Amino acid sequence: MADDQMMQRARETAGDPIGSLALAAELGTSLPTPGRGQTWRRWQLLAAVAAVDLTVARVLEAHSDALAILAEAGEQPPTGTWGVFAAEAPDVRLEATRSGTEVTLHGTKPWCSLAGQLDHALVTAHVGGDRGLFAVDLRQPGVHAEPPDGWVSRGLAGVPSGPVRFDAVRARPVGEPGWYLRRPGFAWGGIGVAACWLGATRALVETLRTGVGRRDSELDALHVGALDVALFAATTCLREAADRVDAGTCAGRSAEVLALRVRSLIAAAAEQAITRVGHALGPAPLTFDEEHARRVADLQVYVRQHHAERDLAALGRFVVAAGDA
Image 1 (cartoon, rainbow, N blue to C red):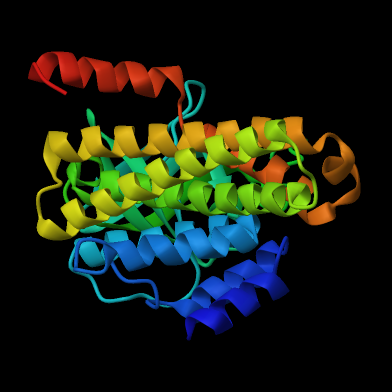
Image 2: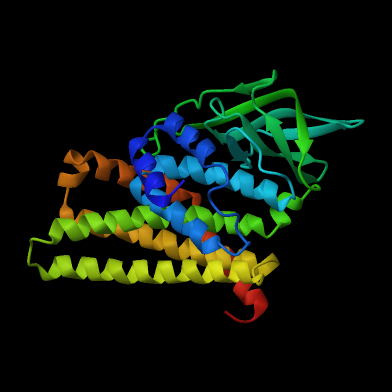
């Protein structure tokens, strides 16, 4: 699908998770697999879709991440719609049990976005003292996608993330236990999420630029200038990361450090944009502009996949241990 067609389809399905899933399935492998020479194009496309609508980008990013993981495992592109369920919670646990050649999943997995609408998912489950990754057909008996109790989110409201209960559900291992977290693509996928944050941030800055274009205010100019610097730094950092991924110099500890740096920089730009655009334009676009109000709410929720001070502390520990920056 041509880029202009992709953007038009994203506009047509804005805010519609079911339409977004159909678009993700149709695009298939249109997004290049990271680490194979076109990582920058992949992240550019994710950012461009996110600038149109974050519901579409959120669904597309997860589906394309699942395909990238399977490609990294040496598997052929699958059909249907896919998600990645890898979150953990202290009060629930998913176990994988092997009996002969068959593996079954037992327990509950939290934070499973759109589980009731997806065809398949890559799911992490505990295997002894490690975690394995498994491909699961979500349409088989024993898969119970439960409604997220108390889900009141105004951001990404159409992409609820509830628990899924697995009762002796057949699953297929993907890689060895521990492979999912150790592989280089784990960090690359995290940067791909940040590319979506960046795309939405650009759209917010464009709203600001348009909104103040007819005014002659030094304060408006300051906000625009500050956000231009933040966007330039974030975009340059993302491009540098793509080049390192494709050059084969981004694996292991270096991949973890790079992902923390890129995600932290882009998250800071997003949060700065939400604040400065709000300060400059006031409440009017938040109360009368549906697209802008939804984008702000969506981005506030989406960017919380960044762990803020905890991620900065993790980065600091890496830097201290390495003895340099």
